Image (cartoon, rainbow, N blue to C red; front, side, top):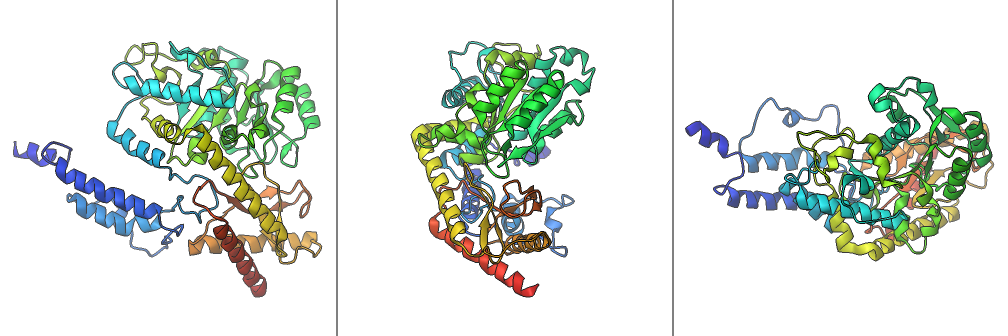
Length: 501
């Protein structure tokens, strides 16, 4: 009996709930204080840092002591995505509704695999979230009586949504592969725009047993070259299972010519699955001012959306929508153990069994903000991006690589933008911008992203691989003043590295 009491004190009970409420309040303050810090990171991990606390060799049975050591020895190394100075990705995770949903979903612990006894009300609310997104993006909505009328799947991220879309494309190509397997992988090719495709598409083909089956079509200004796309569709018509277009690719945030791509694909290859990765761009559907930029998205067979990227929702939530709800029957599975009922969402969630109530975060944001305020947030985000682009254009030391459709600004320090750039000087420019990126990351005050990308706009040197700095923010707390300070810091660092070279 003594052993039972010794163990039970580690689990929530009426005897320890008062203490746990005090601890929970301390945890909440710890997390909120972290989120409100202006610095992106307090401390960088170094080779000789004392990280013994991270080991699980020794336990600490005093929870307040454990959490205090966590605060001192772990949090300083964490990256603060909620800082306005974190300008590399838009995943701010600081909406009040989203934070509330994160706390409640874990405390309530509903399992969305099953409706009747695991998650009765949560299932209805998740279906309502999916229907809400369908309406916003121009898909049809209806009363839902069974799982095949829902028209979407909540997943843990864009990779999961894109992978499920490719699974749908595979089954749409040949509905027997779930039972018989893939017999001729060469007939399951996927077309993507060259140089800007998200890694999840190529990876998912390998996970699905289809191998490296990507066809890259050349781009112009980071959109499909429609002439080259037509050629690829004609040359490989019987071998294609899907065409992927981006409503905001993950590098430049360029929105493709969605209507033209959809019309071309459906005219030449009507049975090919058409997927739009709109993990970023779906947010424009809330904006009256910018919604036309994703015109035609409703023509696609499936759409990936990532609310955690663009709606200030803490990680992780993505939603895959399908134009024809019944198409989810292509990947339907059932078990009399737990899923044998009309509204068991687990029947249409490949690779997932038990699933937490992550959609509660989106439900609370939608209910708290409403579509109109979300649209205003998106408008402000784009207007700040436009301001930064104009700021860079006015700079004598920075050059703008793209006029974005959403909120990604690629730019480079070049010293003197009026000086002609030669092939021999491009590598030096790349090296300076790599040094700027590394210094910003080490200082922890600002974060801008960096990646290699081919210049296909002739801004610096057409066809050459560049290493730009990339601004992208979704934080409603970002201001013009902070953008100005960031630009000054980049220019100063660039000047310093030029002087040292």
